[in-house]
Length: 284
Image (cartoon, rainbow, N blue to C red; front, side, top):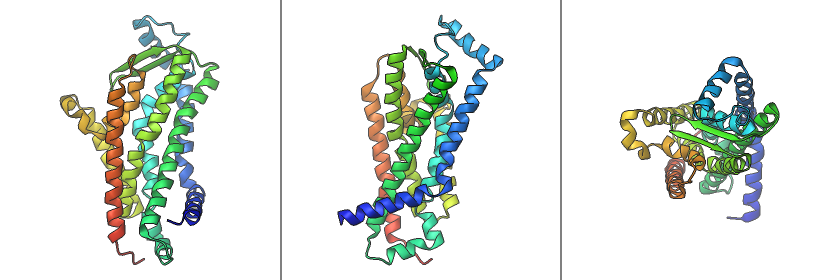
């Protein structure tokens, strides 16, 4: 590939993506969710629930009501169910929208291969995913820190995944930042899946809906107790590998295994997507 031309085309695709209003829906939605959860947790009834959890485990409410605990609570509640929506909304549009609007035909009329177009679209989708996940995690931390006035010690409670941990402020922050990096890597699979559907003969909205359907059905099956033996076969099981960072003894091998599965799935989605894109007759 011609490196200067490739970089210029990649830059143009980034400008195109980040000039669309829908690209920022996820950023605005998660910031709103952070503020709503901050407000809710400062109400008497939710505070009693958190206090009851801490008292049962012999922990003082004052020490574990800071920004770190709030950020962890926000991610556990919202990440799996909400992030897929905005990743699918953007990545599901990358190719299907341009084919529908006819701009893809004009792009391919120039001396540029479909492989280059696909690689550029993949990199743009990966960049959006990385930036959105960083914003989600660091935004939740900043809102909690500012709203609560301090970081405080960290409490992590994920009942569906069976996770519970308490950490000092310094250790909690280190583990939270590591979890942020893992989330930004793990959720690349969602973006790759949406891009794959975007390459099929589907409208952009259909590609988004299909991605969400797969994610939510997978999530529902993963949380059925009778299917616990099949958990490693579900995508959502591996997407939640970031929670392993909050175990007292971090299972690095399990995290590495989930990362390998995610990278393998992402590569498979991209290969399938490119196969359809390369053989597709673009008439509009």
